[in-house]
Image (cartoon, rainbow, N blue to C red; front, side, top):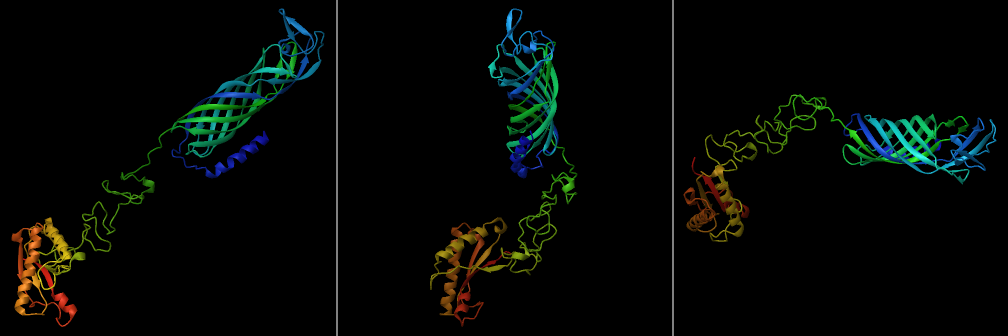
Length: 449
């Protein structure tokens, strides 16, 4: 048995490293199990001592040179009828494999240990005595009751190895005699989880008992009893739902882990029970009326960008932060804007392909709900090269070209004006190429203020 225990320890050691003591349901629970057993008994050495010269039931199965007639049936014994009291003989008994069943009731503690009350019953027929077939088949019946201690591994997995020991009592019935002896077993196996409640148990057990003694009026037989068995069982776990930990603010984080225990019930929280602030503006999401604020933007108590001039454009996007109160502005916070990318073919009012794409984008802005009531003026400007009159005429044509493009893209004509200013409103020096390029521009200005 010591060798078997050492083997079990070596076999289980890799699983022990992978064992997870924090079970999904870290609660003790009861279970029941029923199983089929196939038992193989070791050969037993028997010492038979005669107490008188009569033929007794214990000797009926034993082979011998002479017969003993009981009720007309020849029953063989070890000794002739003249054997006297006190004589003894040693024989070796071999058993056929037997089968039976076992039933268990157990309690699985939190962690790896479980205790089990295990009832086992099986029968083995005697096959030979000293290598000779018996004339009458006789059965050794056994009933055992063990108290087992098992150690489980990988309890959250599908395959759950285990090993352990058991101690108990065995009642052994042989013909009309019986004996109850101390017995012990060691075992290992695999539990296969078929769900949260059901497991299939494939196990191996090695058992040994104190030597039983069978006695009647004729003889006393001192025998041996040990062996091994395989068992296949079905187990049902009476699992309990874990208690729900206190959560005073109802945010889904238990009070013991909640760093913000007074969170309003409508607030979404993080793993620590604190309200989320997705845009990190310092205002919790459940209070934030402007949840998409850009990082680094100063916000008010509602989580929205500040708008100091109250023109409807937040400070972070306001290119003209000091617009007079009540004035309508464009999306950049200004009353006018240079339409970047709006250029024309040289010396003409025809929009370039890129300028037409800009025109489409501007039309979308003007048709958006925020700007749907704006009336704007398209203003054309040139540099100082060429005649003044020609430049004024060209700037007018270019402003009207842009207006026509916006109308074609869905902007109402009554919301658009076109005005050319020629070279008379420069924004840079005409003495340089860069300055002249800046002066050649198309602006859009809000009119309804």
